[in-house]
Amino acid sequence: MIWAVYISDKPHSKINFSIGMNQGIWGVKETKKNTVQDIKKDELVAFVYSISWLKAEGASPPGFSRVGKKQLKNFRGLVQKIIIGQVTRNFYTSFTKVWPDDEIYPHRFDFKIVQDYGEDIFFGTEFFNEAFVEAVRYSACTQGSITQAISIEMLADITRNVDDQVDEESSAVVSSYEGKPIMRLHQSRERDPKIVKQKKDQILNETGKLECEICSMDFEETYGILGHSFAECHHTNPLSFRDKNEETSLCDLAIVCSNCHRMLHRKRPWLTLNDLKDIYEKQKS
Image (cartoon, rainbow, N blue to C red; front, side, top):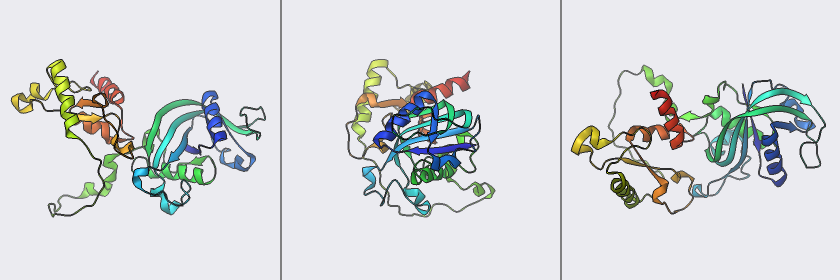
């Protein structure tokens, strides 16, 4: 079973969050006691710290981050941290002082950190399981209630594959009509092809080839002259995180093959180069 708790960026919450993560302990007030009583040893708790609306999306919804369940898709933006803890001691009550603010949080559980998603994580139903987003939203609206993520049993299920957007029932379809022109209005991020060319030229001058930084695939070696100078560039600092034009340097780009580029973006939040390289090396061996 997986639980979620949202922590705001208020000064006292920021301090309490840091202490809790460092000491592996979390507690709630008397009014939230019933939200921790059912947490059991070995279960997982996701600590989601401070969500902010992206300026590029325009004005934030009224009252954000507290939005109603019917507005779940508006509970999105950038969260500062997501940390997954595994419960090592289930619900207990203790009045030993842990946090510096005046109120004591006596209803507690202990945990060890099993996964840290890092900082500045793009959050929302586009990237995380809807049931998980709803649990975090509810916790935010109820000032930190520990909330069960209904229907989620495994840690891997809290994030979404891009493929999850396809209706599972489509597997029963044996034929379909395609090709009709349609118009879509969407927002895209401005890209500069010159910086990509400069990156490729830099690597070619340094190494004499464009080799994928993850799997070492070289298009020219595989396809001959057809593959000469061909490779894709991955932004290690995702454009989606930017609310305006920002400088992209050559070190912000990575040379990757088409397969690895798709794999980097297949899981949301996106994998880092090191994450995917570890997966590739383990699978290869």
